Length: 285
Image 1 (tube, rainbow, N blue to C red):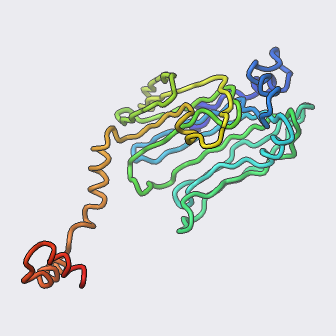
Image 2: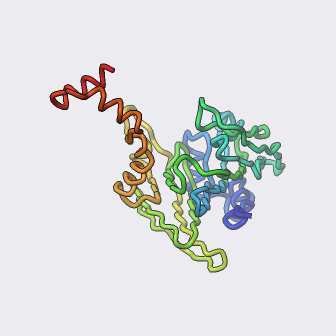
Image 3: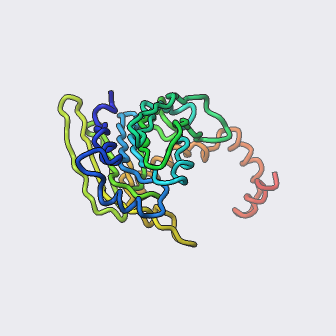
């Protein structure tokens, strides 16, 4: 399975967060516990496999420590999103590690559905077992694109590394087929990716990891979070010229008149003295 390639071993992280490992917790976790944050993200890992036709498969692994009552309310359920008709979401793991050592599992769900005209994306939400401060939430899900989008084999993605909660570790992984060119642009991001190749699967894997990320402090009138946080942007278009060429070929036929329209325009504009008169004749018709 795709997720087995990148899944981190969760038990040592959970044990440390619950105070049952050789290390009680990281400095970042202790600092978060003393803050007013409702929860603390111990691990957020997202891995995307890009197929040659532009479709993708995403694996997400999340470990979150609940710090107070606000965190209990916030994580009563866990949500992501999907595009009905184009994507499916399947929750693989959803459980709560309690402070007393118990583990409670949620009922797993799968989301698909038909495309609708009202909304492009819909929430995929799973209810979690009852929580208490000090518990650790563990959630894994896969979001897979089952057909090409409107953009064909194009791929673009923006990954934001800083959240409204403090984060111990944030890892983003992109796996592409050999020969598939993806262009990267980092903003407020000083981390270079590690890369590896697999000769058997003929893939190249990029990996970015940040540690001990403080929560994003908001203030009135501040710019969007994507302007002030560490952000990684990626696209199979290298330049705006490449994009405009693709877009022109997409809309080109909308600007090509068929024979009936051309004949009507000639009829309407016959005898017109200049371009403005021609425009008036067509507009009035």
